[in-house]
Length: 81
Image 1 (cartoon, rainbow, N blue to C red):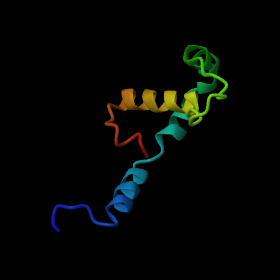
Image 2 (tube, helix red, strand yellow):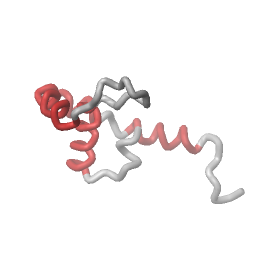
Image 3 (cartoon, one colour):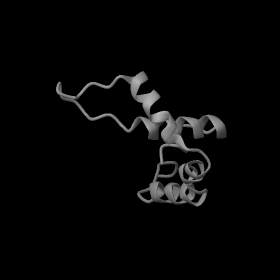
């Protein structure tokens, strides 16, 4: 079974990513992201959700992730944790 991911590979990868630090915390201390909430809500124009479906992610959190990804030239794997 060489070359295939083992059962604990995910935990090792998550531990390695956590050791790099929480960039959302660092950015949260440096930038007041709340000032973007109203503009994001207006631009996204979410409905009330009466038609069903999964509730949307917090737009501010998604914005933070995109800012960090762009600022740090990260792949999709890093911001996914």
